[in-house]
Image (cartoon, rainbow, N blue to C red; front, side, top):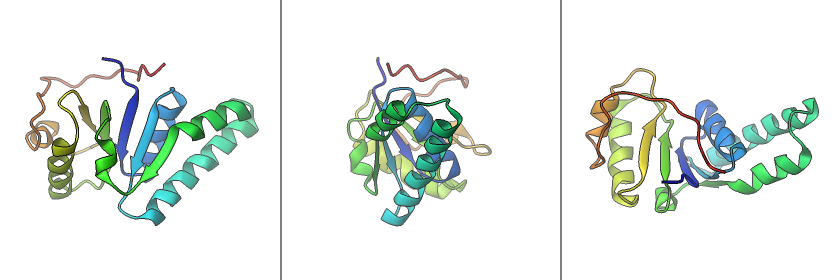
Length: 146
């Protein structure tokens, strides 16, 4: 399955970085926060990072504009209904993650891959909040969006 559309839940430090990298890789990215102010703050952070890259000469202004065009902010989880991949980057509290994954599981198609940016909580336990099949071990890979 080709991954073309990515949803990122959380647009703080980690979520905004994940969204930026995915958009730079060529994916359409929808990033969700709980308020319009937090969406704007996260998108402004990405904008600053992109400006720094242009300033350093590691990203052209044209590429920056294309990355911007692939990013979209929202406050609605329903906007993830056609995502191929959803990455969670919210607060490290299991009840919050349970609420999120239960809701996202009802919105996304069965083909959607779920991932978490957690650093301390059990992935297996989080997976139990969804109907998605789980992998027996963690893996890493680049995002093949082009």
